[in-house]
Image 1: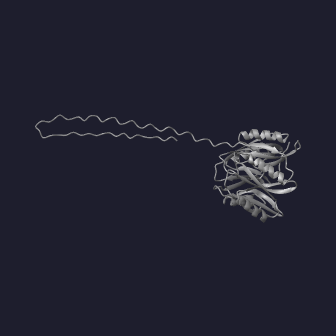
Image 2: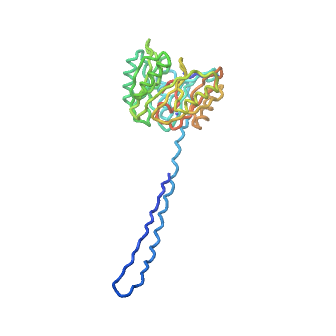
Image 3: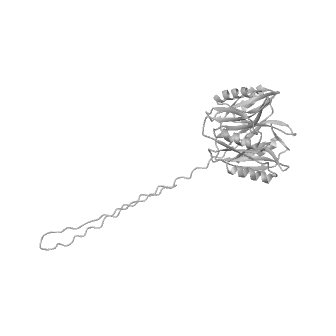
Length: 331
C-alpha cells in the first residue's frame, strides 16, 4: 500500500651505559702488577613498556523510535500534541496517509535524549514576512521545521531542541530552475555555512529556496544532483555510492535526486529498501525494527515502477542538518 509523505601503543627504549676504567703506574724499581678493574655492574633492566591503550570506542549508533497520533482538529490541538510528544523526546516527522484504517496519522520520531518545544505561526504569504519571522525565532533557538495544515489553517512550525544552544539565521534566494543552478546556488550558500532546508517554497507568486545557518560548529555544505534511477537496484547503488562519499539523499525533485554533504564531517550513509506495508501501524512496526538497528525512515519511493520503503543509516554523523530523519526537504 502506498504511503505519502505530506541520522597506539608507545614503545620505550632503554639506553645501556657502559663504564670505562683505567690503570696507574709508579717510579719504584719494580713494576707492580697491573690492577684489573672489576667488571662494571650490570645495567638496570629497561622499564616495562606501558600497557597498550584501550581501543578507541566505536561511535555510538543512533537508534530511532516511531509512534503515531491522529491528526489534530485545529491549531491548538496540534500544538498541544507537538509539545506533549516533544516533552517525551519525540519530534514531529511527517503526516502519513493510506486507504487502510486509520487512513491518516501524524508520525513522530524519537532520535535520542533531547526534548522539544514547538511554536506555530500562520503561514506567511510573502517572503519578507517569513524571513523576519524565521530570523526572530532563530535568534531564540527555534528552527523553522516546515509547514503543516490543521483545522483548515496553513501553519509554519518552529522547534527548539534541548540538546543545543544554537541560534539560527535564514536566507532566501530565488529557486533554481535547473540542476546546474541549484548546485551553484547551494554550493555558494553552503560555503558560508548555510544549509538548503528547502529547494523551493512558494510565497505568493515568489518561489524561494530557503537556507539556514547554525551558530554552532563550522559546517559547510556541498550538493550533487543525480538522474532518477531506472530500477530499484540502480537506485540503491546510487544511494550507496553517494552515501559512501558522505552525501545524504535529500529527496527527488523535478531536475533529479538531490544529495547534500557536510564537508566538515567524515559521515557516511548506507541504505536499505523493504517491502511496503498495508497499514500505518504495520509501517511503524517495520520502522521501529529498522530504527533499533540504526536505520532511519526515508519514505516510500518508486524506481522503475517498483515501490519500496527506504531507510538510511548514518555513521560518524553529528548535528541537525543531515543525521536525523526528516520529511522531504524538512529540517
